[in-house]
Image (cartoon, rainbow, N blue to C red):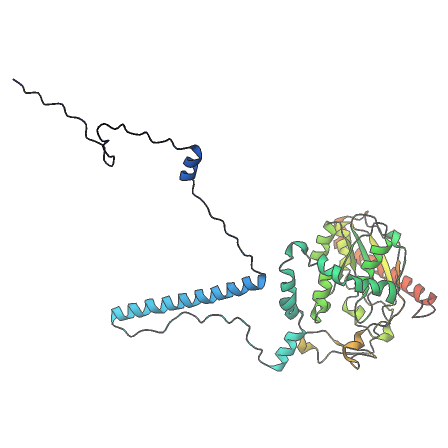
Length: 394
């Protein structure tokens, strides 16, 4: 006969206390939805974050870089020493290069120091990048800074309206829209003509168009001057920059005389120099851009240059050292321009719409158009100078 095993009650679950006899187990209250979300969702504590200023951030970044360099150097030295001790060799010298100095090494000689101080790149590094670091989205691709221009524009407005008393004729000959090239004579030891031309179109043209003028490379070799003009709207003169501006439908001013125009002596005033190889004509033919001749009167007498020193300036990286009746005799005060009367004349436009882009390769056509523009400007200059009664009052 088979013996039946007695029925056994199930073992109580682990961790649960057995209810005492005679007492009913009290049901646990159900967890609310809020408690469930609180128990399952982690709580993030948000603390106020302080935003340090840019100098503090730069200082902390330098400190972190120095600490990282030291840690890498210590770790490498310790690892090499450990390997050498295991191999029974004397510890070797660390191959980690020394940390880079935070300041550039001093120049080798006095000449290097002078060249560095007279270089435009020095001031671009010291002030230009620092000033543009927080406003990079407001500066265009050519370096024009509208915030900086707004700060110095009152000074140029004073020069335009009160000091030079600029008088404008024929501004309505400039197209109201679309690309156009203004070709003007260049004059004055300090080239104020680019900014005065910009303000003349802004004040006298019906659409108040903005002018971007192409500045020759020599301007960017002078201390302060290159970076200063660049932030006011000047663009370094080269065919690529000119075509990019014209593709955007800009109003571009060029001074084909270049450094020969502002570097000529006072005895050669209002005599236009050679216009080079007609680079501006090739660009206008290639892009089918109209040309408007411009004559500027009054700039030659602002800082009349009586002599030009060149043999001492080559080593300093500047094209020449100007000598005027007041400079360098009076120091920086000698560079203050004389309050001459300025007049700006806009001539009849020269339409190149009928010429194709292949005409830019025709050297005879380019030379003929270049001389046509130069002759038109020279005729306007000669007529305006002959009609002028006074350098100071026009």
